[in-house]
Image (tube, rainbow, N blue to C red):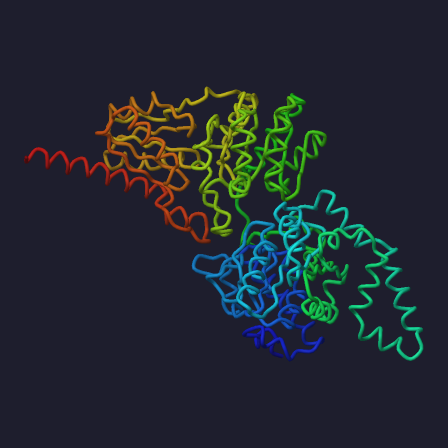
Length: 632
């Protein structure tokens, strides 16, 4: 029997399907998502939870005229399957394939490109204002998870939309989780709405009373959904969303397609801003994801065979282990995460020292200023955060931490290229945006053992300090049992050579060492330097080598503009060494799309072979220059 999904080329193909067919289609979509993500990896749980909601939206609305804006994008896989990308879905997150997130360039049905939480309501409000100013028609709907609703800008947008009184629908996909279980007063508020038996009884009792009205009761129950909701609101005081100027529907079953269709139609027809509170189950329809939605939020590809031998710990796990070790010895040390305790490794601190751990929800700005306040109060906070998410708190880093020279440590995870998560999650800009700020110290370890010592160094430094490290596992090097502080701004020379200098930072040190071994086979003797610090630079080391060797290749897993190589060039310029030849290796000035991490490194020339070729090219340029000078 052919699948219904095989006949869905666009949302228009959903219009004629009855409830039974849509229910069967929902089952097929879940099967397709699980089958695909098992091979490609990806964000599983949230997408499985919104299948019925997606079908209800696209069967009622007229996209792309009507705009559907998905927050974060973790929940957008069903949307991709019914908007013309079914045949390419198996390329999800693969090089040259479709993105794991909505992207304007990928489909006319993707109204807004996303990847970070809390943006949907702002973008939807912008669409709605533009629609009204141009005198156009069409609904605008933002779909935001209850976890993303903890982001501050979501409330800024709700406040603005309520003040404008504009026609806008906000659907809260309430599955009680973001990536980890939600925290905070808002989560507790939604839980009360979800669980309050008084509200449930009030609805049931009200419906029973209406039905008893002679002659009009039954028709009223069937046709006056809007009236019933209005009356229910009268017995539901203190609604946060109504206080902000929104009409409120819910909580409703987010897996009941006919109910969802009915409520969406009514919400779109109602004038002004509307909130639909839909309760869904993260991971629905896939038992492992239902049992452990946090673990199954994102799924790695299932490989044919398990890797042989013990696996090296991840950098994130090393951070968690080290922070716990320091926190047990020093009660001033506290850890802060923005809804990523497992991802950053700080779940270990939450378990070992719960009084020294804070999860602030998806609120990066608050996390950084909270750390500033804690530092002012005598604490030594460690903010563990992905590089791409620290961008969201840049003003707080400058204004609240660095200008006040406060002892806040930033443990910057996923720094560099991040593989199949793609452009929205690349950690490629932190050196540039942090290096420009006074008082900031910036470090990057060559391996997981050095990471431990850098965290110790950062925590004991009397001002702001950042330690950036890559996604994934370390090298399996032995870990020193005793933590030590490193001399601030001091590099490490790993091997000596007189022909060329390979000056590498962080994750590029080991590839540089391998490139030096390859160059040795070419008869080239290379000095390899583990820079350790991007700020302050070890100027004495750099200038000494520059004067002696005259050829330098800088290597960083970061954009070239404003990064480590730029800092080295500035150092040489300030010293007046204008005759030193420098080749900077890093990420070029373009968007790096989703692919494997290895593919991305190769694309940017950040492999041992790429480093070798750059070094040989630089050596060839010097030989050509000498030859040309000799002929003059």
